[in-house]
Image: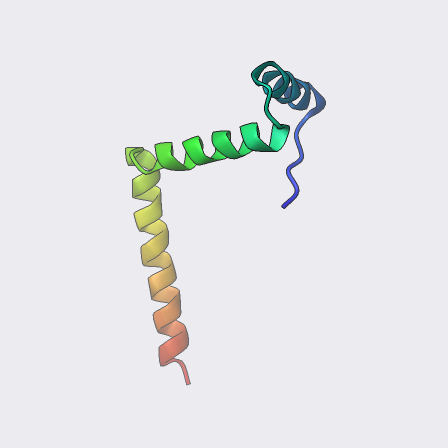
Length: 67
């Protein structure tokens, strides 16, 4: 996986990692894990998730039923 950050954000991330004595990758993994966990309790995200599930379910049914 490649993650592109603007230079200013990349430098801030590097500084956080340095201060904490950790790798940039470790700090980035922690941040991504926190974001994913936060989305699990975000009502707006959950609503969008449901909309996407319905749309994909409909598309899969169309593929299955087409001949």
